[in-house]
Image 1 (cartoon, rainbow, N blue to C red):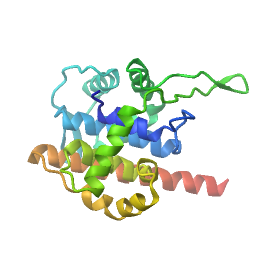
Image 2: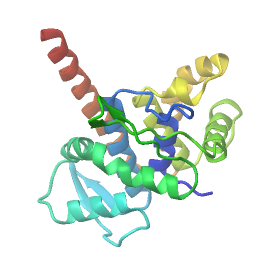
Image 3: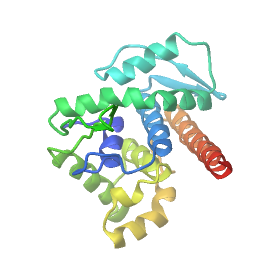
Amino acid sequence: MQLNLIEEFLLIALDDEKGQFVIDSTHLYFGFAGAILLEMALREKIDVSGDKLKLIHDEYEVEMVINKVIDQIKNSKPRKLKKWIEVLSKQAKELKEDTLLGLQNKGILRKEEHKILWIIPNNKYPTTNITPENKVKQRLSDVMLRGAKSEARDVMLLSLIDVSDLTKEAFRNKEEYNVVKKRIKEVTQDIKISQSVNKSIREIQAAIMVAMMSAIVVTTVTTSSN
């Protein structure tokens, strides 16, 4: 079963049994925004020129979440890459529902409707078919620990896992985690793809990290002052 980068990121971020996300909303939403842009860059739908993000192919894809972002970029004034990451991270709570629905349609997740205080929706998405996620984790483990050749998609997912604080979730074995934690930044710089896409992907990688760190600092300062 073929999964895209956006789906793989969400599966790793979800607790398989509880159906809840294992990271805070800042890491989740910025990571999700990054996954969308990296998937689009891998498909050569967007490019980064200077510090501006440009849509270079506007043909629709199978995924509704990508099509919504295509429309948004196409109908917006030119924006800096960092701004687009911030915009999409603010919309991630709603945008991720399309991806979660797609994973339900593929028989990987099921939806359990819950509410907090009988009013606020707090839906959960337990895993019903663990095989696709296990295959993703095995692929990453082979790259990180057994010298398997890394594809661009593997490197991008590892990059998102690193910046979103998901390394321990993706590599649950303590010994494996300790090895991966030391090597993951080195491996995520090893992108063997075309020069133009390589540049755009590296720009997106860097921008995700900067945007997320800035948001975490703001959240920490705000929390401390209250």
